[in-house]
Image (tube, rainbow, N blue to C red; front, side, top):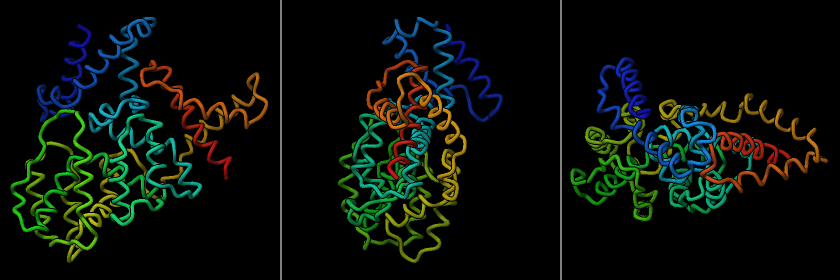
Length: 344
């Protein structure tokens, strides 16, 4: 009954704010993903959640979804289930590890994979490798990368994964002279993971020396967007990049997209590159957290406080209640900030 009422209210509100969206389109998009997940978690952890009431549980769950905290420590299929989940995870990744950018550290693919898996235990290494290929132009992906470069490439790769996979197939067809009209475009709204290994093998076939006519690629991209059912970058943004080139290779095009401010504004969770490492709100939260720990009983030094914080994210369970997850997120942010700054 609660779910039915919630769906009705949310649908009415959506239609009032955007009359072009029908009730069926709204329910077919993302809301059912969250309703299903909320009920599933409630049933799996009934004793834990019913202690503070079912209504309060749903209120907390959807408040967490709205604030973007719901993806922390969740499984990969969930964090990529909707555009909002993907954007939220990108934001969490940035907020947790921005200190790496402030310190100027360069990290490898495996190190970025380890950082991502602290937030999502089953995050696939193939996704990290695909983002690294954008930064390094598919040239020796074992090289080190700065945090800002990797972050913007990761945003593009993770948020627009399905589109980039289809675009890569089109690009390879153009290189071999095949008709790109034969490309099969994914249209399912399923949240099941696409075959990352196959995508990785396709990536390896593309080299920096392989280039195509940008006008032909632009036309193919327009055709792809016309029939594509997933999120895709702005057509005008892609066209603008292609118009500036005589010949274009796949990874140089993606790198230009990753750096384009339109992409950043569309996803809507990261600041511009000039402001990427500035977060006064987070710094203030960290200062308060450190101050609380430094005066707490049994805390002999700031070093011991840091040690306590370090272990929190590693022991976290993806199935903890929402209150616990919120606390863990703050501690995870604090851990990264204090640990990195102390090392410098």
